[in-house]
Image 1 (spheres, rainbow, N blue to C red):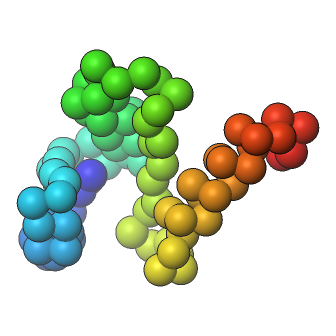
Image 2: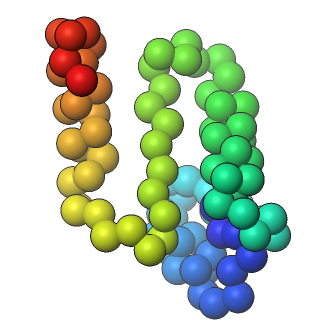
Length: 87
């Protein structure tokens, strides 16, 4: 999601993901609305997949995330699946 961006955010994002994703440009000027539109778009794209098979996550452009942040989330989800008592 590129929400009301006036810089090169969308261009840089498209360059980074190449053919492996999509950058949606909107003008909502709202973090919550951008998340809702993004989540709705992803769930529609994967509508034929069982919901438990889709890991929907996001981060803000201003966030400082580690290179392997998605791997960490997947690992945590796996642990939670194996042991539901884990947070």
